[in-house]
Image (cartoon, rainbow, N blue to C red):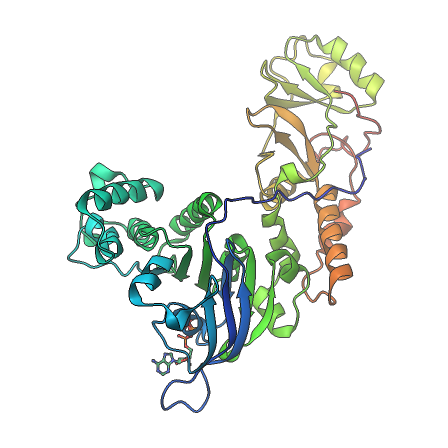
Length: 433
Ligand SMILES: Nc1ncnc2c1ncn2[C@@H]1O[C@H](COP(=O)(O)OP(=O)(O)OP(=O)(O)O)[C@@H](O)[C@H]1O
């Protein structure tokens, strides 16, 4: 039988060297002239040093206004903002530019400046010498994945949207500020480029450990990027400020639940990887050199209906059913090929897709593509149940999707092998490999 033990959830820690500083907003309000209602009303929040905090909320709720008060592009009407303990209002322009990088949608590049000149803007304002600027430009282009020789002297119009965004991020990082403000920086690019830019930002942040305030109205982007998410309502009132896991498991109110949307439990699966959970090593493996009769004996002894054929490097090749063996003279060409596999690096969301495509369980491969185990629907639903329990114990009642439908299906098949095959459910003890 498949192992029904509680899956251990052990998300890896992200121990970047922190170069960021804490930002505090205390009772910050912005009233635009002529408006009866404040655009931002009495916001108090702490953005911890070295974390990526996402401000997310509906259009017009005041996200941009809140962010732009941090770098004083907008002056607060009242309240206090400190950056690394210093009052933002008391920072002069030079210190402000050194401390805070700023990246916006469509990059906001100067069209008549080359890539290098765009990246060099802040270092130039700070009075760096030419050599130091040139070195920094090269270093940053490399950091954001732009080939120096190819792109240095191009103009923004000669770049794709994604390349422009990379230049925008490089420019924001130019003076190595501890704080980075990013206002929908990936809002104007196609979904694939957007996913790549998000991955790169996560990679960069793992190295840089900046304090990043990131504005978006895309909740999925917030879940993917945020160490913490602030869900904002009208006039930037904070509806919930917590980790993505906690918000997905326990939306604080109907507004947050609406924003989280359907499938909240399933979204949590993007936060965990296969290597974070216990998946059983259940398949009985064989290589093509073994004789069919030997394998049949081993399968009978283990009570297995299916065996997994692996190549010399233990990479999964095909599933062989016990009934394929009676007439076979060799294992070379029998069975059917292993379908979607997942790696230990895959997210549980990707694993779930493979499990569903494979009818209940999927083969897990290690870093060299070798067989390391099987992950099944019970493992995934067990993780969801455990996350829910943890968050229910910690907080308010969950308002999201419970994922019970998938849990109901999980009880159906215990056999090891390509589920959906008639023999799969009758596989009592495939423990050996
Ligand atoms: N310069 C301004 N003068 C007057 N009202 C403004 C000004 N800038 C923004 N507002 C108003 O303040 C409110 C908040 O705007 P803000 O741009 O901060 O929202 P947002 O959440 O960033 O919106 P979006 O997601 O659409 O960019 C809106 O009602 C907007 O109309």
